[in-house]
Length: 148
Image (cartoon, rainbow, N blue to C red; front, side):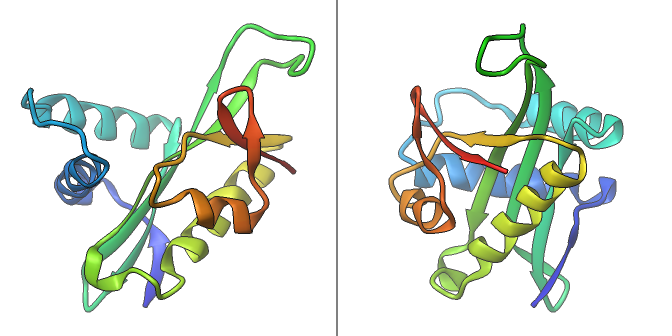
């Protein structure tokens, strides 16, 4: 298994895996979101507001992860307002249970540390919640969060 950052020319694969993730999470395919996803991945990968780590085997992406960086108005608990948010955690069915998601999670959390973030947030699916808890995330104001 090889782990590396996703590249711009892999956006179509990221789009397809994102759609599979949403379907696996039980969301109905009521809209075609291909164009929006293509635009999102292209813009955010280029400007660095999203860093996506992938796992690949034999040149095929088998799992994805992502961490978004954005800013909200400051609060007392977050004076900078800076947020690091994990998204796009998805592993193809046949590769689940092999520690791949945990390895990707570590890589995206390390990205937040490198950029000076003090915490990371996410919304957990039912399937993913136990992985995040094992990593140290706890429920916090409707999110799961870990302090770095």
